[in-house]
Length: 228
Picture 1 (cartoon, rainbow, N blue to C red):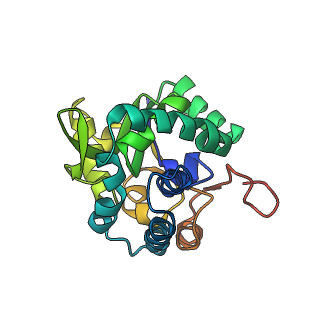
Picture 2 (cartoon, rainbow, N blue to C red):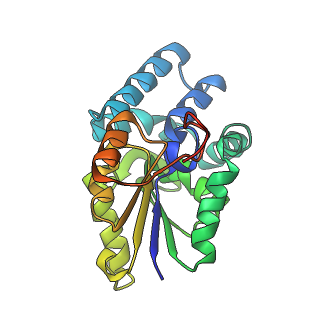
C-alpha cells in the first residue's frame, strides 16, 4: 500500500477553484464585481509568483462565506460544480486518481483552497480524504475565519503529518509516497515524498523538476506535443 497525495487547483483541475469561485460569485452578483475581481486577480497573481500572504488572502476570500446562509452557499456551489468545475476535469486526471484508488493506495487531496469549495471536488474524484483550509463555524454559519493550520506551503506538511498520525502512520511508513502538484508553493511537500510529480507545472516548478529529474505529467493538454 502506497500514499498518493493530490493537489487540486491546476493539478487535478485545469483551473484554480478558489480563483474561479471568486469569479463565479461576481457573475452571480453576490459580491461587488469590479472591486472583487481586481482583488481576486491580484491575490492569484501573488500566489502564482510565490509571494502570497495566506492570512491576508483568507481574510478576503472567506468573507462571502460568512455573509450568506449555508443553504444558499450550497445551492450556489451546486451550480458552480456543474458549470465551472466538471468542465475543468480531464479524463486523464480522473484516470490518474482511479489508478491509485484501484491499487489500494491511501489517497488524499491536499489543497490550500478552503474545505467548503473543495469537499465536493474531492468527492467528484472519489478521493476519500481531504486536507484543506478548515473554516471556523458558529451556529451553522461560517464566521469568515480559518481554523487551525492553513494547508499552504510548509503547512501542507504539518497537516499531512497530523492526519497520518490519526492512523498511527507517517509519510516514511509507505514504500512509495506520491505527491502531484503544479505549483512552486508545494515544493516543501514535494521534497518530503519519495515520488514527487510535477503536473502541468508553473515555470518555477518546471525548472526545479528538470533540475531534480522529477517526472512531469500533462493532464490538461498543456504540453507542446500534448504528451508527458
